[in-house]
Length: 559
Image: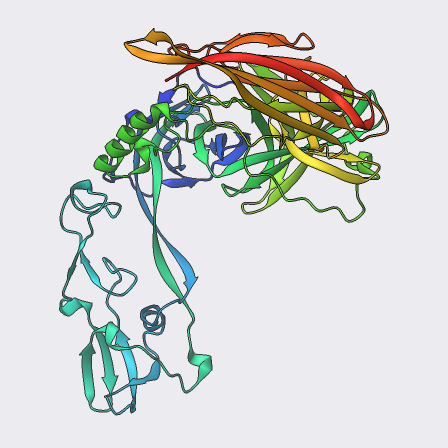
């Protein structure tokens, strides 16, 4: 579709009162493309056909601030685009006694008569209109010009319309054996029909909706609405199947959670990345919220600028159940990955012709690929026990540490792997589940499987030297303390394992066995002690008695 290059930022046209147009034609804008993030936000493209010149209206989408744009085909010209209210009548089931009375005007039935509980047979002659009546049947004073039904007086988000007493035209008229009476509808809390066939259980209810109304000139053509909306998201997850000592099979699926709108053969894009949507929680200026509410929401969005509450990180992981394990997972996986393309720092997985009703959840396989991997990587990470103030917070002597059995994966596909939960399986058995972090094509990542209970790790640190008053920093006197640490790894498996050990420490490294890689860290630059990370790769032979030991020393200043 060739669309005019003229784009209309409709959020600049902010009309809060209805414009007098005679019988506008209502259009249904059907979604044709939805590009969704994982945080519930999506870019929606909807289209509607305009067949001839005239006055039209289309339901105002629940767009986010600054994101609602209209464009249209050449040969079609739109004018006087305003946001206003439209009233329509819809037949609905009666939900209250008041609605039941309204639906049965002209009928004869019984109502409670007095405090003695006697019933009185009446014929309902007329009912008041429902204008300015709340759900409890109270009459509202909406004469104050600041009240628009969405925020109270003068746009105050905490205001409420004033309750007023009913007037004569707010009474129902009934006929009894004693004559004609006028009563308030709220005085009736029960109705009894002697003949159930006379009961009318539906009524016409006036519905008010927000619409975009416009004048169309020229030939027929398509109108397109583009906007950000909240209410649809995708949730990815992985299965990593161990094949042998050099490769694994990585499969990815997406679950689309649709609470936004009905999708019928809609092209869907699943976006991987970290979006910067500053006004994700602010409604569009065309949404007819009060001006005060809009300004308050804009101020809040500005205050939250430094706090990314809508980051497109992993949402809560999906619960999964498998009755027969994973012995035949390949049958449900695509032989070719779904199409996709990158745009700047985001990636778009493309799924055409998606049909998914509002409230439904859809399951969509994305990729399956055999990739190189090292399935037996053991990691041991040891925390820093010295804080920025030079205070030591060590663990108890001979404390047992945690060694993780992990997989090192290399992404040899043409698509990135987005952050998501990943379940590791082998021979149809679940081994573990952890988070797989974002991996670009050609990149590698380490995925934890489970704790390596067959590899025992112990760590101990002792103070071996203290020099009192060794230095003065910023007018304060510091002691210089030397710590000696010992690491011991015992391999209870039948084969040798290689363990990656990472130790972060505050202070100067004095010595270390087994020639670790020492990296100076940029954190804590304002402190008197530097920070470093020591990394070893040690092959540990099997044997419960021997094990492997590493000794290191470092010194730091403390008050």
